[in-house]
Image (cartoon, rainbow, N blue to C red; front, side, top):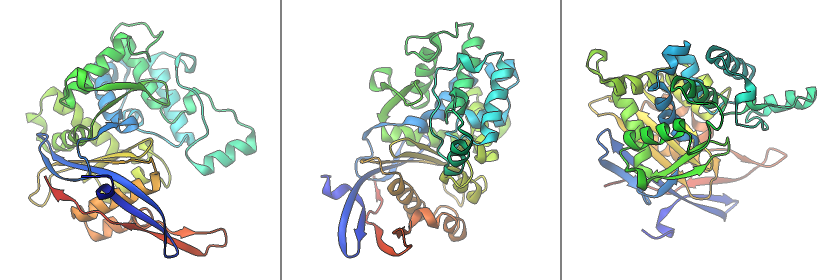
Amino acid sequence: MNREQAIAAVVYRGDSIENTHIAHVAVVDAKGRLLSGFGDSLRMTLARSAAKPAQALAVMETGALEQFGLNDADLALMCGSHSSEERHIRRALSMLAKAGVSEGDMRCGGHPPISDEVYRAWLKSDFVPGPVCSNCSGKHAGMLAAAKALGSTLEGYHLPAHPLQQWVMQTVAQVCEVSGNAIQWATDGCNLPTPAFALDRLALLFAKIAAAADIDESARSPREAGLARIYRAMTAYPELVAGEGRFCTTMMKAFDGQLVGKVGADASYAIGVRGMDGQQARGIAVKVEDGNQAVLYAVVCEVLAQLNIGTAEQRAQLSAWHHPPMLNTMQVQTGHMALTFSLEPR
């Protein structure tokens, strides 16, 4: 498929084409079989924060949650890219306290919050955010606990050569069923390693998370139990995965436990859908080439519609993302986005 054939969205201003957006989609089952897709379903993709559930699984498998009394709400924050709301910061501070570490041990930096409302409050109070305010602070708090659980030093816990990150890299490779040399590692915005692998491997991760939730508790392997707990935590505490008015939170609330979803920076997204209506559990991964987040959410919504996941009423709760209004400063409609792709059996 050439680049023109992979155009998934066209943005119009009036009747004129302003932008076209290339996207790739992979839909797989829990065995990794490619069911359908669009564009290059095997595109090498930096998962960014969409990989957090795999990193959280690695933290869990150190025994850190049991050792330090971390609960499902803490696990949800570990998997999240939160809005730096007060509840998020409190939760991160609580996790640090449980693990017996401090904000000074964290190797992520503060940044403007994802939430506009939080940002306005910070500006009014001249607030300077620290590491605990990072949208990835839950992941870092979990990583510090995991380093202690492994008996490793906290110093350099974020570096690729640290025993903790070696453990994480091994876990990610195993759960995504990718040989170690087929994963490329880069440094994420929060200063931790982030993996790049074929897009269908990201879909497989989320298919496994959803499939584990479908397995009877008594029949799960230890790893399946961990994946099922991640599913339970993210769907039970969607407000800790993102925040007020955010897509991930709204989608998981709308679908009421039927699916789990996580965004990654620069327009990657992954969803795990539990088996329903005679369908097996599935994983979905999407990447928009130019990193446009609004286009990403619209494409994700269209994928849900084309796969007929959930009810029309559930999908309608995402309509502001599916068909985003394009208004100027006088609230006059200036254009629209057309979603031009169709999923194809693979």
